[in-house]
Image: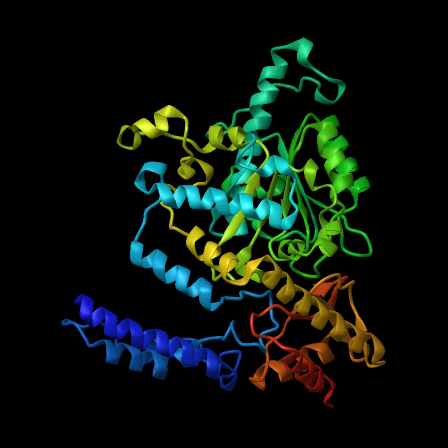
Length: 487
């Protein structure tokens, strides 16, 4: 493809995308494609010779679009928002065009330094504790998803705890009552200590269990802590688990608390949990994948009270901050702990800038070596909207969700199933049990006019409506409520 051909096709594609957004409400939100139907409509073998761009786009419209669930539809109320925006798309396009591989500072200084700047900007924008700034002992990095962030945190926590425990067992004077010497560790695989125990609530995202498996801790060694009536982790139950495990000669090392659980947007009490983690020397990771965006607005920052006690924190701009997937922001209070765990320096990556210690090499901040220039799209979003523009959108989404929660509470046929602190409302029909609620959800989603998903709270089937797509307006939420109320 020549530069002139690229110009022509690129302009046509931009027009296509703009038209798609203008027409998106005409498509069924949830794809009705049958399993295997998309593949069956495509050739079994690749073309022997190149095909024109117009043929590719014709297949996109005729075959691919019917298999798309339209996450960017203003009538998408399922799961969580994945709200792209035009400035973000343009930033992604520029990143793809530059083709940067930003594994170390030297491979593109701008990719590293812009990322560091944007992550520092966000510390101020979200009111995060100053220890997460790169100008101190901490710093931030862009991961792909919150799943990668929690894995990186767990790996650093594991290494910090096992290294500290080995040091303490050889230095009696360094011990405190809460760090008594433990029995020698049994034989382990790849340096992992089978005595390790991690903790999360029964409502925590499944990525924590996956991280425990990948990190060699073992899913069976992840304790699920009971929650209260609001589905938030109970600190007294966390303490009970930790004390029991220590009494059994085990090694508690990691806690994941959540600001906004996936099922119900529950808010764990960070200050109480953080105090327990400090007392017993456990790493506290805070996952705020969707709800973290709310902290752009000062009036919602009370939800992260106690965050200064955390060792690491993550939220996803690709969920509610108008930045297309994938983009997770992950901070640590002590970057040295993370780098010690993940750094490896083969000869082919050695260079003067790295040796000087004056630069950040982000390859040391996550599992993968290669990395895309994700900071560009986040930078474009922040500069396009400005802090006040972002706040206005978040406030409007919260307003719409709160209005919907009020309509549910006022209708005798429905009930709220959980508190709705932000933009997620969990609700259900009062009568008819699980089957009635399943039938209601099926009717809504097969209509093609909107898309909701469900969860299970206290063993009961529960509907979820999440407001957060970029172009969702009050008329869309009112139309969803009207459809819900239809007999």
